[in-house]
Length: 106
Image (tube, rainbow, N blue to C red; front, side, top):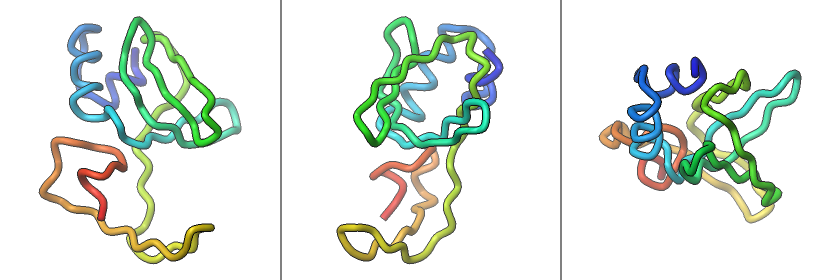
């Protein structure tokens, strides 16, 4: 449960599930498993924590997982993408929603 406690600052399983939905549903989180690190969107909880990566692969993590899940912290600025240039800027007034999502990034 340490992974989820670190993200939510909650101790009980019910509190963790609720807080994950409030703070992270629809946000991009970083998942590290062994030496591999990748990003996935948090979708919700239905007995397991549900994620979907950029390739459309579903990821299910139990409440007792040892896999690291953290908030990515990219630098603000311009990024080249296949669709064109993207300017990443965080909106600090949306602190209730953590991670990278449309509510706190412009």
